[in-house]
Image (tube, rainbow, N blue to C red; front, side, top):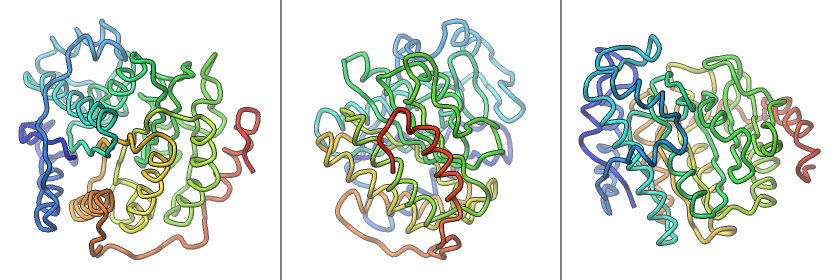
Length: 335
């Protein structure tokens, strides 16, 4: 199932902004070309009460009443922004609830993205934390949630929201040292949440071999031991080698394989309760073909992917993987 609303195209932070409506247009175009833009559900906005599970009331009121302003230099607010952010959060909520109810994967094609929005702040093109709202909704129903964040930038907002929670496992692969500057391997969470924040801080030049090794050596064993009731993915396609904002080098087939392995975990551990929420990704063709490839694979198909150059076949991310394993050996059985 896909969750999509054409109103997401109405979100324009500022002219020529890299996070622009053409991102979704490219995705929809690629899906239509492959006959995959089917089984599409619309979205309803999240309620303020649902958003308050992860954001403080003071921040929500500030954002709602800002009118025209900035959350940071790259994250502008206009009179309609709050409603569109609620719609994006609602779409991820709907996709997640559908996946839990029906036991089949859902992909929420949303903007604005969300994983940089924390309890009392926005920024990094994000206003409300879509995936955190969906995860908190499931925690309120008594479920344990694993969030796999494959955006190239560390999801500092998601980390801060769930840092002290043992009900949400947050695992992030990201390029360390770029925005937002957070996510070292040694950050394992706080309080009761120690061990449930897992950061894999890759360096520039890490791609397919590094990501798949991280999945095999860290993601899979930790998620298996955590035993979630559902798996959510923050999918940013900005770790792609064609992306203009980062220096990671994942190929389109590498992305599809990574999501295939993650979906297989959900099939094995939690009855295919698996939902994907769009985050970043700023090269239009890379973004479109990766999402089309992922949707096809989730539906049992394979499609041709043009951007298939493998620039990391040796596993340059080995040091980052080892650092994460060292940090988490006190909490998990890792080789």
